[in-house]
Amino acid sequence: MFNIRRIYTPNSFSEDRSDYKIINSGIQAMQKRCVLLFLVLCVSLVPYASAAEFQVNFLKKPPSIMYNLFYEKYELDLDLQITEVASQSPDGKRKVTGLKVIPENGMQKQDFGATVLARVSSDGTSGKLVFVCRTLHRCMSIRKKISDHPLFIQQAVQFAPFGTQGPIPTQFGAVRSASGPAPVPAEVVFQRHLDNSLSFAQNWHGYVKGFGDPSGNYWMGLEQLLAMTKDRHCQLIYEGVRIDNGKLMRGTFKRFGLHGADENYKLVLEDQEPGGDLWKGTAEYFNAMQFSTFDADNDKYKGECTKEQGHNAGWWYKDCHRLNPNSWITTSPSFCWNWCSAVDVNKIDICIKSTKLSFSCS
Picture 1 (cartoon, rainbow, N blue to C red):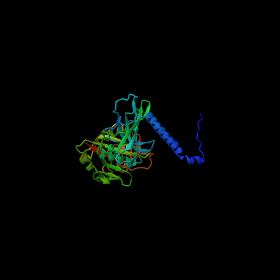
Picture 2 (spheres, rainbow, N blue to C red):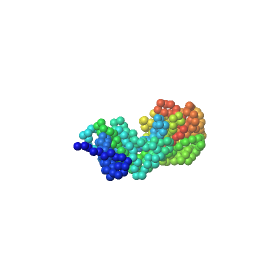
Picture 3 (tube, rainbow, N blue to C red):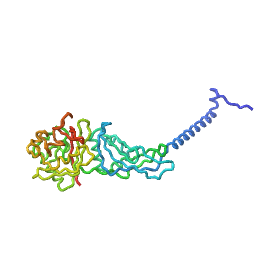
Picture 4 (spheres, rainbow, N blue to C red):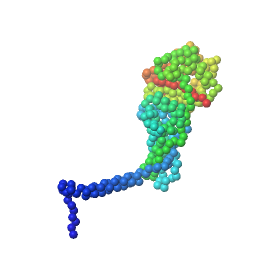
């Protein structure tokens, strides 16, 4: 007739602890079931694909270095291709909107000495693996490591694509690239101008034989440069760092070589690669120019380019230059004509604070 309910007082609680244990265990079991139900609901709302549904591969292109004006840092970029490998889901079209970079084989992101991230195109079919470096030297070191060991980066990272499946946010299965990036062609540095601690105002003999330290300020020497490029298909790579914003200026010339000493090491410079940072007429301007120093005037100027516009530094002057990597490095970006400089795509003289000239041959 009556529902009798036991009321627990302090005394009765201690006396009937067995009833408490039964009630408490029931509550704990109910809590566990609620947690499990919540997790099941979460998994159903955000699907996770255990099998790899997308393949991320490096394109057969060498890494490139650029200066990011927004972050004010250098970036080493490796191009990626993102391809769907599973059949189309009945739940809707799949699309990758981002890539998480996962270090592998004991690597940590900090082991690269740079911030490592990935960017994905708006259509989800391509992207870039990006190393954000504090210095140009760090990015160049990473590029060299990748060039020396092409499989290194392929083995060091995995990619975890995420995006959408129909309208639902989805985490796709992690994948390792099936191919590595194309190796950077072996580049031989024949000029490096980092500062004014070593004068490039050298005489003819100095420029023929070479001077400086290959790890610092350096000129290989015209004799050696001729010997290494003679009868070979070579390209010239120019790299210079701007004083005003720290951006790397780069230019590539697909045909590069020298004539012999009897023609004063006349320059062969043709087929300037489009899309670079240098004035598009650079190759045409310098091609077929003979080398000049302050004691050997071989330019086409009525005066002497080496003395009047080169601070006594040697170069393949015409009347006089559109690229002047051996001249004195100025600390002011306001006037560049007679200093270490380059003419950009807008035909503006840009003061340069460091340069590197290299070549690669096939």
